[in-house]
Length: 84
Image (cartoon, rainbow, N blue to C red; front, side, top):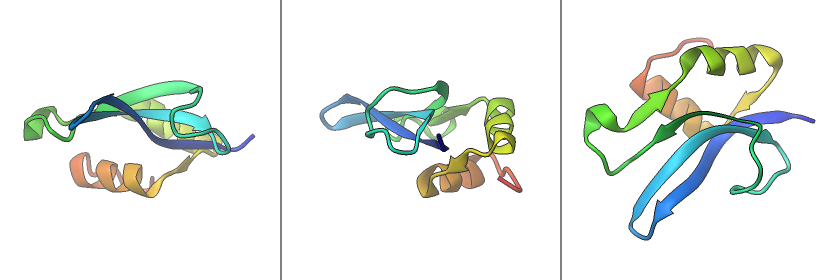
């Protein structure tokens, strides 16, 4: 099983919110998750948009989980994580 850290879509019509989760690479977008690492609300205020448990993300990356392109850009833009 190859794990991937990616977004899971939640919310309502025209008010999207996403959870940052660890999932099996082959699972559908809204399928079963292994672990939730945080959330991203694009319609909220700038300081409330992204909440992530950075230690868990680093732990999963060390275990071999791959980051999706979107999650990587969110983490680099908001938190400035290096080597992730």
